[in-house]
Length: 256
Image 1 (cartoon, rainbow, N blue to C red):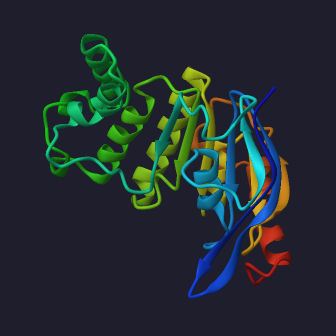
Image 2: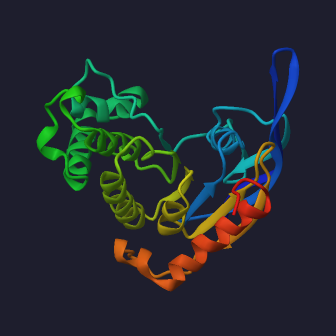
């Protein structure tokens, strides 16, 4: 079942008095309960496409349907995690997680209980009363994920959420995100520059060209779940990363 339909989407900006064709045309259907990752070079329109899916930007051409409705008309049930955690320094960790519930006017007691449960699940429950600056980068991103999951979204949009983290923490966060997404059966769309991360986290990888970004390859990742980091040493994993790398080489994004 397709929950999101992207039909001939393009995006053109005005910059310095000139038109800049940043994206498209792109046409894809995103299925429920799966993780779809978009990987491509800087400036190819990956984040632009994600913002369009979330109703934060509008296409210049084409349309996006979310559960059969035009994007932007009914956008409940979507959680977003950005590259920067965007935690509010004047609110403690628990209050940062509670922000979406406050904005929606949800009952506080139930929201607090769910927030604490999510923080515990993500391994930062003992820091609920701390301030954001007291936490490491990886811990802050765990809090950002908890905030995105608080209102039980059916769709999770992740824009390079681990790119600012060190390699070890990034690996840990990838394993954790996989666990949470699979437990909730959430539909997820992830943006990343990392080819191994794309393969490890995904049921499907969309490979984009340089600007204006179009889909070069649509890869179904048939690897068993749950996945451990040891999977990255397997030949099947290497075959998927090689296929993506070859696409970038053919398009001139990478030089062999």
